[in-house]
Length: 109
Image (cartoon, rainbow, N blue to C red):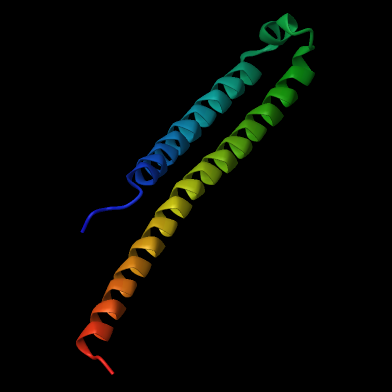
């Protein structure tokens, strides 16, 4: 059977890959922010923030980076899964229509 909507299948795969890459990048960025927060006052003086405020701000920023990164990665992965779900629904509907057509032709009334 010929597959329909091949581009949507590719698009779902692209969404899955982007979700994984986005999640990894978010984790690495939050790890970098956490290291900057722990590094000390010199790093935060560049941004015009004192060391104590910079430490807690860095911890908060790292936590928010992880939270939003995972959230958007889940959203992207969910879009990919939604496309796969709709493709499976279309395929099952197509097969059911073919089966019903075949059954009505073999059993004329």
